[in-house]
Image 1 (cartoon, each protein chain N blue to C red):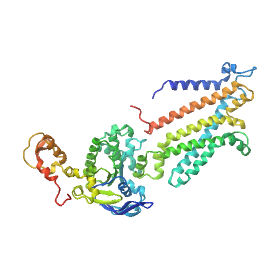
Image 2 (image 1 turned 135 degrees about the horizontal axis):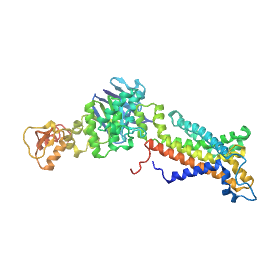
Image 3 (image 1 turned 30 degrees about the vertical axis):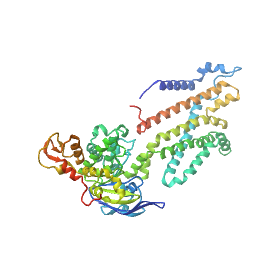
Image 4 (image 1 turned 90 degrees about the horizontal axis):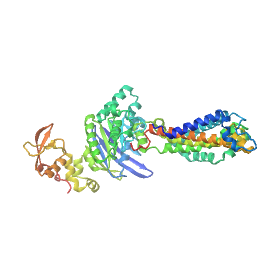
Amino acid sequence: MIEIEALTKQYSGTTVVDDVTMTVGDGEIVVIVGTSGSGKTTLMRMINRLVEPTSGTVRIDGQDTRAVPAHELRRHIGYAIQGHGLFPHRTVGQNIATVPKLLGWSEDKTAARVDELLTLFQLDPAQYRDRLPNALSGGQQQRVGVARALAAAPKLLLMDEPFGALDPIIRAKAQDDLLAIQRRLGTSIVLVTHDMEEAVRLGHKIAVMDKGKLLQFAAPAEIIARPATAFVAELIGTGDRPFRLLALGRVRDVIEPGPADGAPISAELSLRDAFAECLWSGRTLLPVQDNGQIIGRVSLEQMRQLAQRPAGAAA
Amino acid sequence: MRIGVPLLIRLVVLAVLIAFLAAPEAFAPVFQPLTKNNQPAIYTQANLIDLTLSHLGIVFIATLLATLIAVSLAILVTRPFGAEFLALSRSLANIGQTFPPVAVLALAVPILGFGTAPTLVALFLYGLLPIFENALTGLTNLPPAVTEAARGMGMTGSQRLVKVELPLALPVILAGIRLSTVISLATATIGSTVAASTLGEVIIAGLLTNNVAFILQGGLVVGILAVLIYDAFSALERLLAARTGQSRRASA
């Protein structure tokens, strides 16, 4: 658990992060969203002390981060950044082995871990281990960057716009992969982005920052339904609200029994995609399949209700 | 690796150079037309191979010392604690560069006497700036995402320097050493005016006796050495840049 308490950063009189308090639970993905200059990156960089706070504390599992030297603290916190920052003069394998080497792991243990991570990120170890980063595609480089951040099995992973340099199709895939890997490893993640779409897609909780202040810290559905300020509402975009709400749900969660005609959809699809399929194919009922078996259907009417303004929400 | 015509030409030039240094008399007919009044066509007062080795030795020692000092300085002033000395060290190296080598020689002779020592001092001072400037450029123009990642991974300052910053800056530092070496190769000829044993001896002998053949011999040997060494350094830089994954990828 990461407890951020009254964290403040000032640069020569200008307050960049202003008295932020929030908690990241174990295995939780917290996405910090804001425009550029909102202080979101500074807030994240204070967690691993790449930026030293002016005041306030950060505790990881109850221990103050100032209790150990900054470089030792960072070796136990994963760190992945935009443009991956891979060392161009070291092979993929050596890049991933960076933190295990710093921690003094044995050669065997390190090599086994490198291969395990490459496999986890769908890169054949024999084929990619000894390549230099610039021989990889952008999406592959990004995966190696995340693999490197996870090499020493940190309990916490910090990500600074990790998908910012990817094109939309690869980005969506990278986001799905990250979610799958996070579910498997149970790593807590603090991710910084300016993209509300990405925040809603990835975050268990979203922290909205503006001018150094934490405006709202809540689950995505709550942020969409009840934005704390006009700025938060603007960030979500009023026209997109129902679709963002739908994007939060999976078809699996709303399946009803009964028949439906036409091509089936996957139970893992988001409700937003299912909704789009209804509109596009002109159907009101869609059959749902899971592992090749039809397990029920979803209805347009049900999705329409789910996309409606929740009771008590702002107009 | 492509071994093409350019490499072949260089190998031939090198072979001719070695042949000339080993048996200069054999080339007498080439230089004979440049002489007047039955002057000797080939410089024989000293062994050309000895002169060349001595010339290269002086340049090597001066450049090595300049490299050690300049790179150390560049490392120091790019560390957080040394940042305030950046301007000072830069102006010191600048003074070394603007001071004419002849003036350094003239000033050094009364202190160090005639011979190799004043030449070494002049070449050393002269070689500092290109290496220092390049090392500085190399160490400060690293890709920000890479240095950021190195910090974020938990590398200490010295680990970042040795494992990331120096390897990535090496091709640029080498370019500085290359410039410095080539300048020193040419400047070392002046050392012969204060009795250092360099190829300048041949040129000066030619100037004193008005013998164009001597001047041309000395000049050609120095010039060809400079070109070959320059090319060798360039090739090494390209190799290193490719090794460190920094070469702009060819349209592969």
